[in-house]
Image (tube, rainbow, N blue to C red; front, side, top):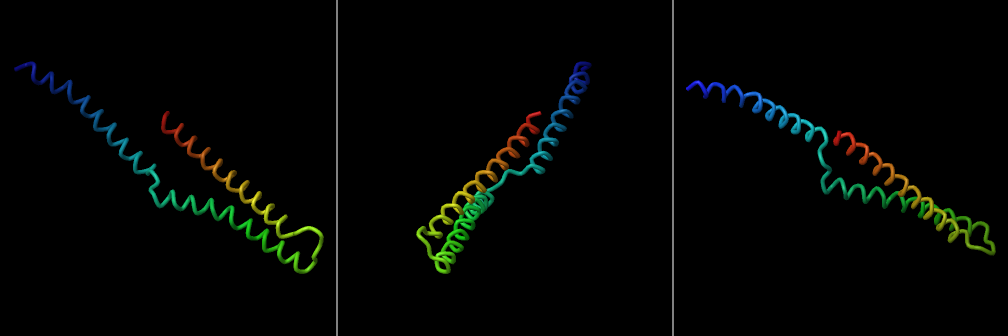
Length: 111
């Protein structure tokens, strides 16, 4: 009969610590919710538009230049390629920045 209160006293700190740890994990999960499918689709759209917009702007400006000052070389093709290069660089830069932010967040959660 004397053993039972000692067992309860020993279990209480472990139980309290376990409940505290679970509560902390739950709060952390609420603060850092994992992005869903729509977030991923939005990212793909954002990256796509960051490439498409400079490419189309380059093509439109090149077409306008070809129409108003024709020359030996095609401004449309040159500015289309320049816009594509700028758009790809823009997308690469944005994805690298997001990747770095995710890595830093992961390192913070590991600590």
